[in-house]
Image 1 (tube, rainbow, N blue to C red):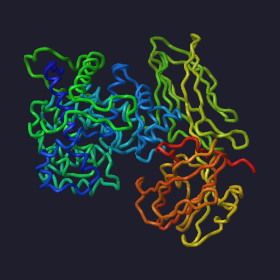
Image 2: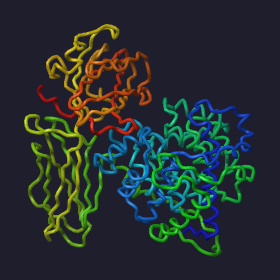
Image 3: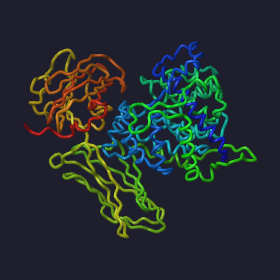
Image 4: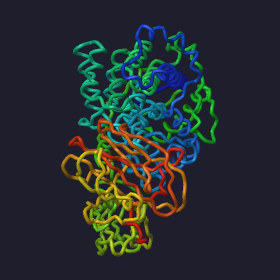
Length: 633
């Protein structure tokens, strides 16, 4: 068992927040510089910390809201609690945040919202806020990992998800372990060994041991794992591990290494400073770093309805108060707080992550629910979408957690015109057993009308007369028509007829390939095959009212865009296949139907095209619907 005195917990949490503020003040002005700053200038940087007035970051914005939410929900906080708080208090519209918010509004379950149609799902957003969970569950990396998982799955998956769990577990371990190598290993034990983040961190540890120079290790990490995105979470996790290992517990050396690495310096420096602050305690942070920095956090304008300026002493007090509640409710037998130090120093025991890793193995498209004595799992087995005339199979699993056998009758409802096929016989579940079965939902084109979100419901009737309800939302796939390949991108081809561009000519399967697109914001060409050349992609978008909007078009080659017959955008540039290879521009959508046509140069065998409609504030515009054919004129 890990035993912390009240005074020690206070000092460590205070150190965590001060270290994070120092890291933000150091890293924020350098954020996004892939080459890293001038190192000689950076060596003198502590003197400039006082000029950074409470530097903030979106990760800290989320932490402020999570603290307020915990005060109301308590240690048993759920993903739904976090989503409600997000929708009420956070208006962030950059990158992964906008796409996750759209998924909340589509009523997708939390376990799916971070993965679906989110081109930035492997960014650093969750990593930037996950150290809070380590401070709330000190000395209990497993509990910290569970909290971080519940948080990160809201808007991330893959590396963005694993990096957040890694940091939360490391910060928790730092309360009981002073050896940096063991702290890193404790974090690694809670993410899959074959994950990209785990491989990157282990490679950093190996390279650092072989070369003993951070410069060489940095270069090798970038050669092996870098992308076009400076906010890539795998690179950020690798840089964090490099800074910690190279710093060997020395605050200044750790922070300067993190800053010298460049890329997402605000996130990495804040994470390194916070972790070192927890490991050392506030009093052991060097005075020339601790004293100049402003001991307050300034929230961004996207935080709604909460104070904008929060002193670090208040942050520390709130964290400790909630941490005591977490320790009492969730960390029994593993962590205790005491007034006096134990007779023998406590140490972090080898964490058992087997149960946690089994949960991660379910994958990003499995949603779990507890309904009375039943544990219910819905496996979408891919994006949670539905298109016309393509049956969608769902895997369903029921586990009986009661102390007696149960007889359960399952049925599924769907919107009008949809066809559901599922077992009709009663299911008998002995105590502690589970049963799995499949259900199929389809939307015939001649009977069903697919909407943006298509609510289905799983009803589970138990023999005692009770009934459990589990929501199953299927997102309507976008309907597009593709034509090509044609010749030169600089020449006009048949689809540029005025009637097609303006929407006077109906889109149909004659001379076109119909595409049912699950994730248009990620890549709507997933189902398009063909030779290199010029392609045309067209769709009809319905709007309930006229409004100004923004269109985000991502492509690795040239694009020309028409809306209702008017050219609204043109560019011809060869780019990487990356979410960052995108342009965003204003458009005016009219009431009723709008014809969107995109001409795309296909000079490369790898073709990438993404489309997102946004409102003027940058949030995904769910009013713009292109899931069904245009009604006849």
